[in-house]
Length: 80
Image (cartoon, rainbow, N blue to C red; front, side):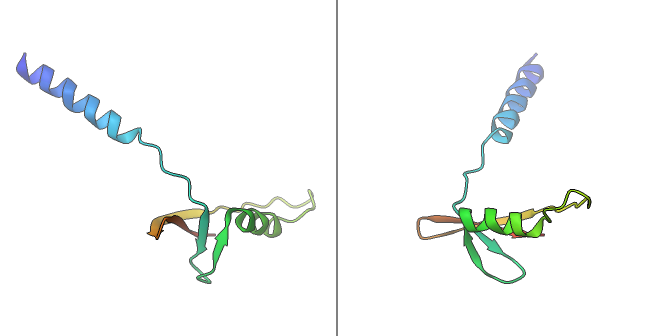
């Protein structure tokens, strides 16, 4: 009985820990160039990398890596 209750409590704690939302960063750092971009600049880069033509199928994926804190800003590193 004690083991069952203990297991349920541990399970609930694990679920609660996994549901934490990541804070949204306002800046992004390109790991290839080291350049730090604002959210608007990051969106513009995304639009530049995808061609306008619908004839081509393009698969572009951003891989978000570590998030760092500098001062009061959160900076999300990314690769593509």
